[in-house]
Every structure is written in structure tokens, then in C-alpha cells.
Amino acid sequence: MDDLPFQKITISGPTLSALMHRIATSLGDVDGLLFGHVTRLTPSTLTDDNTPQNPDSDLVATITSFFCPNIPLSFYDSLGRVDSVTLHRLVSSTTQQSNSSSSSSNFLGWFSARRKSPIRPSMREFCVSQSLSRLKTAAKGDKDLNPCVFLLFTTPVHGEMLYHTHEYRAYQFQINSRCFEPKTIAIDNIGPDFRGNYGCFSPNSPFPELKCASAMNDEVGEDLNRMERVSKDQKELDMVAEGFCVGDLGKLMGSETVNSTMSLEDLYEKMLGKLDNLARQVEKSNAKVLEMENHNRKLRYKIARPVPE
Image (cartoon, rainbow, N blue to C red; front, side, top):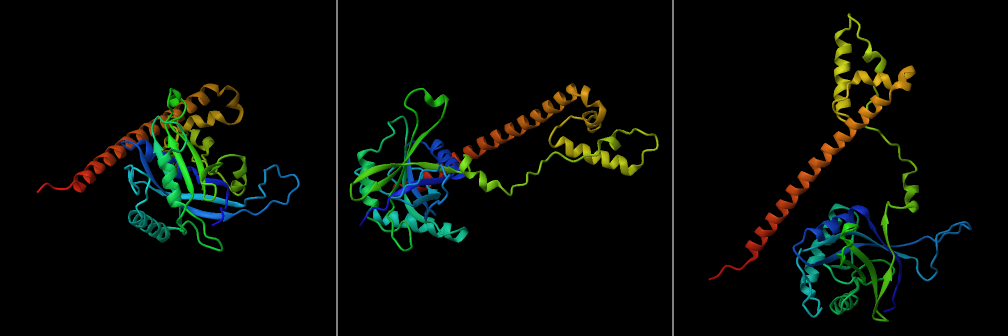
């Protein structure tokens, strides 16, 4: 079967983050399956288009989901021989769940995650990719494609952990030449190429629209409706800058703006404090989620362990 080379491999930012989080929280080396779809690029006819065009390839493999059993050698043995029964079971269960919840997803390939090792495919990974390349289950359409996508993750060998936690590379296994061909991996929604996706985006600031002038009038005969409105505005302001008085917003408008440096700094400090509080809450919730995942993993190992007779 002729090789159909990809121009690039794309993955969304949330999918890549979830995959790297699963790798980081695993107890050791892991591997898994990659799912997505293959699309054909529309060639650009613009003369001022600076995007490099590859006339030999107009196919793009997009990774939309993955499956990670949290154990090494999940569908193959130590020699790289694929267990077709286990692989078929894992692919069937994952694609059924994906197709029932969203658009169709097909088996594209697999990934391997190692720790403190050179970021190049090993002989065992070569054997696994060669076995998978013989399968015709990656895509459906006018041309069948093999599950030839391979993502390799590793942690830095030396002290680069201060800058990033993982290194990753994308490959396509070529059947005819029997080798890995490095491919560009593009992350969706990052970079200037995706600015057009936000052409119709209208930002909605959570900062409330308040009538500060009316809130500052401390007239003796202030009615109940005004007091309720000021109380409601104060609650909305506390959601973004807790502790900042709603009456002080009037100092940031009109003729008093010139002398409002201290008020602006105070408002900015209150907003940073609110963000810091939210970040601490997220950090605590992530720690609880990780603790529950480890507890559930131990329970699964305990259930799966055979009972001695």
C-alpha cells in the first residue's frame, strides 16, 4: 500500500494539556492510543500568502482524543508484538464512546511516554508502529489510511525541568521505507494562524457597569431603592475586587481622575488578591482530584489482583 504523507499533525490545546497531565500523574512510563480524523487542506491561491505549501501532501491528521490505561505495554508485549484482541477491544470501546458523544473519531495511532530518556523512538516502539501500520482502521473515505501517527513524550534528562516539564515530538511511520518521518505538530488556537477564529468574538468583562455618581450621593433622604442598588453593586464589585468600596469608583471618573493614582493601585491590589484567592482554591481542588485518582487507581489494582486460593 502506498504511503500517504501528512503535511502536519494538529492537536488542540486542552487535549494536549489533558494528555500531559495524565502522563505527569502516572506512576511510571505509560502509553496509549490516539484518536481523531484526517482532513484534506484546501490549497491557497493567494499570491501574498506566506504560509509554506507542500505540493506533495495536503493531508492533516487532527488528534481529538486519547486513551491511556495508565500502565506500560497496554496492548503489546515487551518485544513490540501487538495483541490484536486487546487492541480491537480498546479501539472499539473508545470509538463507540466518542462517536456517541460528538463527531466521529477514528484510530490514528499511539503515543509513548518515558522519563529521563532521549527523545527518539526505540526499537520496541519501531516494532509496535510497524505492526500498527499494517492495520487499515485509521480513517474512512475515498482512501484508507493506516494508524501511523506516533507521539513520543519524555521528561528532560538534565536540569531543564525548571523551564518545561515534558518534551514531545510527532512522527508518521512510513510503510514503504519502514522509518519514522518527523512531522510538525501544531497546537490549535495558539499562534497568529488562528486569529481569524476570533473575528466575531465579543468580550464580556465581568466587571459590572455601575453608576458611580448616583452611588456617591449621600443625601439624607436616600430612598430604599437606591440603598438596595448600592448593596447589589457592592456585591458585584466584590466578585472581582473584594474589599474595594463601590463609592470609591466615583473617584476614577470625571475631574477627580487626575488624583486617582492611589485608588487605582488599591483597586488593582484588590483584584490581584481575588485572583490569588481563586488560584489557591484551584490548587487545592487539583490536589484533591489527584488524591482521589491515586485512591481509585489503588482500588482498581486491588480489585484486579487475583485472589489466592
